Image 1 (tube, rainbow, N blue to C red):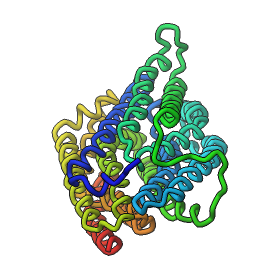
Image 2: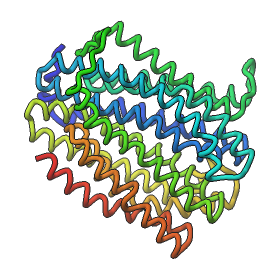
Image 3: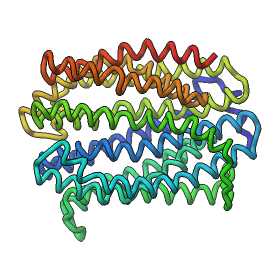
Image 4: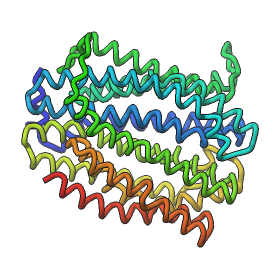
Length: 440
């Protein structure tokens, strides 16, 4: 199966054709996250608080899968561009094998630590009980999540973006439909409350995985999964060289949220809820931009492997412009209708007032953040995991945490919101410099 179109077709139409299915699927996925939180918020504000506290660990599970999947994606794209079929097959096979191991480890560890984790941030018995109930079910699907994401990255690496879109959207739509049925006990379904939200999420992921397997066995891919897996150290090292930094890139937001929850909880639980709502809304903005980056990543990897350096830089530029456009739309929404957005998750006037202030301040950094996220994605596509990690460390730990702590001591919880845009502005300069040096 000929993949040379990745280095022959005009760049902008090619990027759009690869990115558009991902943007659509990311939009549906972000819609699911909002709908899920919308229904949970209708249970009680305690339920929404529980979901906000569980979110960092839930995001960490996804981060491990996506991060390692990016390593697989980059390796497959590079080897296909270099016309090395044997190594492309080995990357896919070893990646799937290792993803099963991660899924098992994550299931055991996350369920075990969750009770103690929740008690660090709240003494509310109802919140702790709901958080534990949700996490036991949601985290029980960690193996499914790991496999589903690995298959997603394999399909994307060979340019099968429409298949990836169909599989991801099907699982998300299944979640959206099942959520109210299981949460509120509509029709023949039992009323499960917050546990119903967790079960709907897990079953949606099962649907996505089953569809990927069905497509693999009915529509051959340019890479083959071998039945037996011999773990080659050199190949594993290549996967980890991108996968570990990419995993940390994805997991760092969880660390950030956890740290910021600690800072904000000292003022009021309202600010913890606001932060949780912001990250739900943020997915609606950043996931479409991430869809464009997912379309870019295999193209950059393929062209880099094929020695097409000029196309690599053009792909970066076009992705940056498209991402900035999405960020501009998000900025306008947060500035004009913050109360309407927050009203999807809470009816408490104090929370809406505090959240409106937060959204307007944080959104000041949206447009400039497109430089950082595009640079990270491009570097991952090039197989440059460590430079990509350096950018994420600036965004999620090195800069923002000291800024949030110091500003909160000066102006109160509002200082945390100002730390976001200040950090994004500084990181944009750093990230572009890192990209230009690493991509030479």
